[in-house]
Image 1 (tube, rainbow, N blue to C red):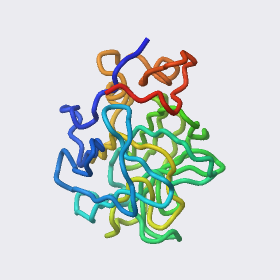
Image 2: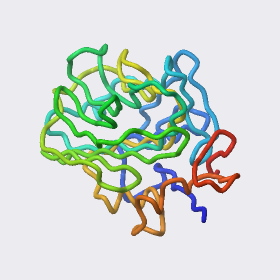
Image 3: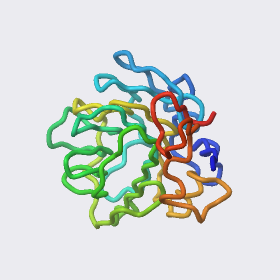
Length: 239
């Protein structure tokens, strides 16, 4: 039972601020905030066409832009597909941050407590780890006062709070500032200037079947060669 994940940049109704499908380039397909590959970041088979491929010491770097400077009560959404291949306990998937200390930033990352999104001491934890060798859709929203974190369209955590002040650091895909980078693949990155609803997030995951989420989505967006329900090396995403 295979379905095709929609390219985030084709979701016309959602209107992202910036969108990075990773289709063998680092272009922002929506607003022109183009990035560059840093330190050998490359591409591999993704969930929809190619994806960004990271080894933990490289990333995509997008220069600072006014429409990427979310801060305090700025509504926003970050969504992406991730395929983790590294076993490190701390990894940063995306962030806009100077260095890796206490500072003004926003980021999506995970540590021993699981996946999380936020910045400056406030945010939301999903309470779950990013699995190995499985394409997983992650989305985090802030409506100005409430954070939500979704995994494969399912709401996993909610909390009140705000981001820190906006900063002038570059946006990074595959890392956040100088923190521990991501090892694996990241695809279909999209950033929005509003909080997407759960239905909108599910629609970007599973177009045409907005009622499906959770176990109905997990593990379906790839060629399942050995029929075990898990995306493994050698089983590329549909493209």
